[in-house]
Amino acid sequence: MNTSFDNNAPSSTIPPLWQAAYEKYGLRNNLNVLEDKHNLIDLLQPKIDQHSDSVAFSMGPATLTFAQLDIASRRFAVFLQTQGISKGDRIAVQLPNILQYAVVLLGCLRVGAVLVNVNPMYTHYELAHQLTDAQASGLIVLDGMSTAYEQLENDVKAQLKWVVRCSIDSNAAPSDNDIALLSQIGSNQTHSANDSHSVPVSATATESSQENIAPDNIKFAHIMQSQRAEDLKDVTIEREDLALLQYTGGTTGKPKGAMLTHYNVMANVCQCYAMFGSAIEAGRSEQIKILNPLPLYHIFSFTVCGLLGIYGGWEDILVTNPRDIDGLVKIIEQHRPHVIPSVNTLFIGMLHHPKFASLDFSRLALSIGGGTAIIKAVSDQWQQVTGMIINEGYGMSETSPVISFNPPGISSFNGSVGLPLAMMDIKIIDENGSACAIGTPGEVGIKGPQVMRGYWRQDNTDTFTEGGYFKSGDIGIMDDDGFLTLVDRKKDMILVSGFNVYPNEVEAALTEHPKVLEVAVIGIEDEHSGEVPKAFVVKKDSSLTVEELQDFASERLTGYKRPQSYEFIDELPKTAVGKILRKSLR
Image (cartoon, rainbow, N blue to C red; front, side, top):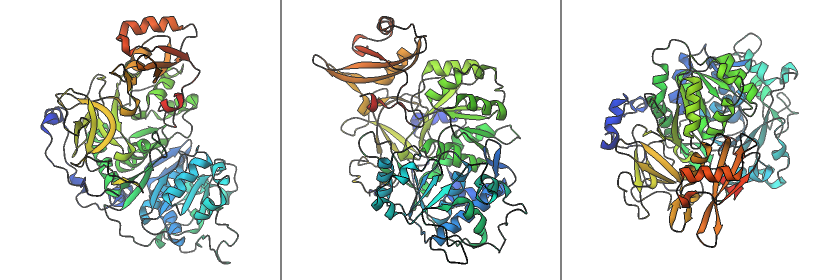
């Protein structure tokens, strides 16, 4: 582990490059709110108490107030302690966007357990890697999405001491209905936080408790019924204790776990609130509603929707299946959210829904774009329909995740990923680690309180520069005002006869064609040039031809940047949050 670089004490002085921009947009470069906070619970509990009667999370008609979330998460934390979970133990959570996720998340944080987010769509091979690499003690899964667990080899299963199963079956018996039980917390139908008549559920249960519950079949509903919030034992959790092992997408091999501390994550929550959260709330008396179509197991949604929502006292509107655009549009119509975070592909999906343009966007305060580059044509169309631009930001699993953002005061899409957040520094570096001149492309180096400790069980020698900057692997340019523009991922760059071609640039150009829906560009081998670009195109209009694209590209791109071949496909391969998987196309 590389812990030699102190990201907890960056300079409080705004770097001169973006000082004027900070002043222009009324941004503050301090995180004073964290001075007496040691962990995420320290940060979030006062907000939970303050907004106790408000809805914290909703999922369709089901809701969970902050008070209910408080009690339920304490009950889950007590369950963890009955299983012998201690600070630092890893707990794998393989859940989609459901109410139980929020309960499990806070429950783990309360006892100092390290949350290991797992994609519910993973195969058993992918699940096995994360469980064994993280050395997880327990697993939380959703009934109906537990196939990967069932298919695990026995030696991997044996590593797990217990498995908790959640359910969203509305037809389940009252005693097994997770959602109904959560909605009843605080009423006379279930015991309160001070009820002393509950019985603990344990994988090593006795006759007086739940002796028939097997270690791999502990029901979430039973935990909610049987544990007492008041039985939670205090745990001392410090800033440098791990909160998350957030696994990267594995684009350079097996996924690696980014070690995110309590301070990393709570700093990023406060950085985001300072950059755009407070602006959303300004002048509004009603509770803020944030749409959450992105999976909470992904770091973008985890911090920007989940934790920031709790910190702000907002309602987090959980979308369990964002691929159902009809359902998503109905949710937007019903809730009229103030904040819509999304990715380029999902913005496109919403815009192409026949009903979307007729919705009421009068409450929309901010549209957040991340995960992958936002195409200008998409932002322009979004602005035409909603009246708001898409404010693009930049983040990584390794940085909790947000690094930079276009502040709410920006009035037009500028193609950049914005200004660095408070209390951090960004340096554009060349191959030798030296700072690049303004306007010169180089690798983006990041230093700040949100930067991870390092990769779990990895050699981190090359992860940071000698000066302590995390080497992102992204190629970017910083302008005179401190705005960062990403050129592309270093590994996705195409080298054509010595000239650098960045796929994002080519994709953005081709997407402007009126008959094109989506494009992904990769480099393929060429005996003359070494590599040449190839474009995979999803048609918006079935009449589109290769010849039309060639003519269009010749108008917008210099010769070496133009794709030398095109392939029409029905759908681009993507991650769960809509990021195009170029490696699959390769």
